[in-house]
Length: 217
Image 1 (tube, rainbow, N blue to C red):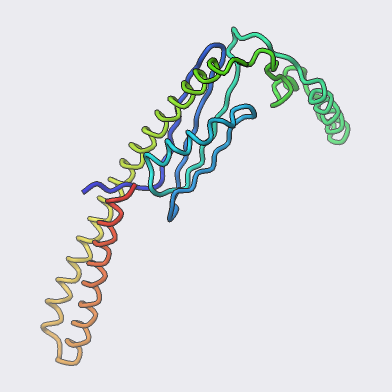
Image 2 (cartoon, rainbow, N blue to C red):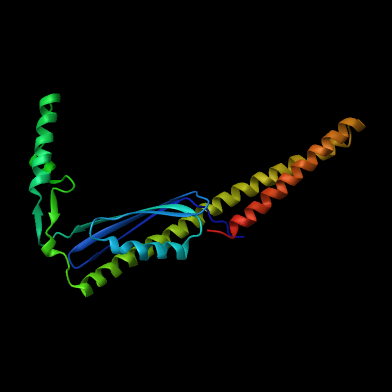
């Protein structure tokens, strides 16, 4: 019996003509499939196919998916966002004045998100070019999802082993209690037998729940 958990983490990366990217996929428990996708501006077209890829692989779980994209070292067309840099410099000076800390270094300011950006002219404008780029990015996402499936199955196997051990221990204790009940007075025996019946029903209900979960991802 295959038992799949709903928790797991996976990642994948790739590159294509001056760009490199990284996907992160995290899954936690949820009654249904809920996907939250965080992608950079300009890549909104990836959301519908990304959701389709998730729906093909998962039935349940809250998925948190994030994509980070940056130009490779050989890529051209990087520029400094003057407004973002001026804002960062102003904030750095205010913090330094209030705290007495050393002012921020230039390399630190340039490393802030949004200060150095890809020139729009360097981004692929040709629809075919963008289609190839998006296909490569989605291929990486599919790989991350496949790894997440394996991670959830691995986690599920551990949970199944733990549940089996716990149910075995409960059954052992129920059997031991049944033998003990046979040696007790009639009134006490009846009460113990009623409690044992409830325990057996709970064990069977737990087994049924495990069977249901084993048929879902």
